[in-house]
Image (cartoon, rainbow, N blue to C red; front, side, top):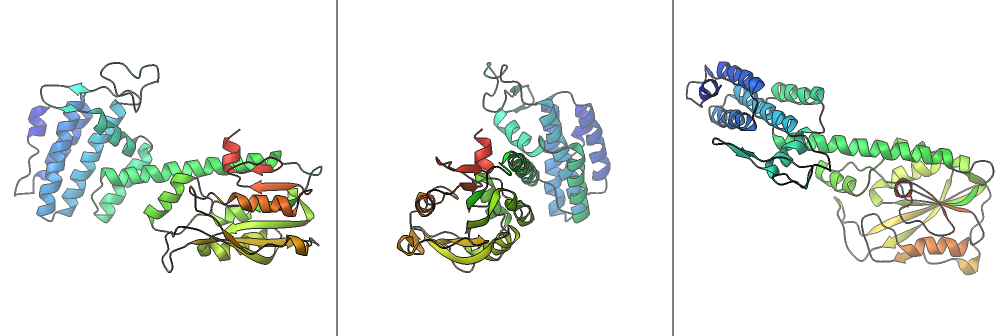
Length: 347
C-alpha cells in the first residue's frame, strides 16, 4: 500500500492525477491503521494545494474530498469510548478516551482526532456523501470547517426539535377546564434572520423557534375569556410579535420599554432596548389608576435573554389574586405556573 500511495505526488503534469487519486481511494479502503489514513490524507492535501495553483478546480475538489474521506475513516476508527474506559493511561479523558497512535511513520494526537470527530460524528453517511456531491457540483473544495458547520447546524436543529417536543408535551400537561389563567407573561425564543455566525450565537444560548411554531401554540386552551398578555419583543421582531399576539387571540393595547445599561448589536441602529407588548382579550380591564406605572423600565442587561425581575414583580403587584402563567419560562417564580424550554429541562 505504501508503494501505491507513494505515487500520489503533486506534479506539473496533472493528467495522471485522477488515476492516482483512484489508487489512493482504494488504498484508503484497505487501510487498517490511523498512520496509513493520515499519510493518504496528507498526500491528498498536497495534491489539492498543487492543483489549486494549476487552476484545476475539478481535481482540487476530488483531492479535497479524499482528504475528508481519510478523516472520516479516522473518526470512525476512533469512536468515543464509554465513561468507564475514559481516564486510562494513553487516553483522552475530555472526549471519550481517544487512543494515541504511535508508529515509526506518523502519529495523530487526541486533540486533532477531537476536531475531526466534531466534523464527522454527527453527519450520517448519506449527509456526508451529499456534502461531497455539492462540493463537486459547485467546484468548492470540501473542508473540515465546512463539515463542522454542517454538524453544528444539524445539532442545533435537533436540539430545537427536542425543545419543541418538550413544549408540546408540556402543553398536554397544562390544566385545562379546571384552571384558567388571567395573566400570561411570555418571552418567545425568536429565530432571527441574521448572518449564520450571529444566529449561531443566539442558538448557543437556547434553541430558537420559527414564527409559525410560536403562533401555533394554542394559548386559548389555558387562559380565561378575559385575560391580559405581556409579550416580550425585540425591535427587529415587532411585526412578528404583533402577529403572535393576534394568533393567540389578544388585541394590542400599548407597550412598555426596557432601557438597558449596555448597547448591543444592530444593522440600522444598535439595540439598547426591548419592548414589552401589552394585549388583552375579552373585557379585561386596565389597572387601577393608582397602580399605573411609567412605561419606561430602566434595568441592567444580564445574561442572554434574561429579563428584569421587576417586570414579573410588577405583574404580581398589579394582579395579586389572579392566576398567572409564564410561557418560555427561564427562572420560575413562586406562585406562577411555568411552561417553556428551561422550565421543562429543569424537571
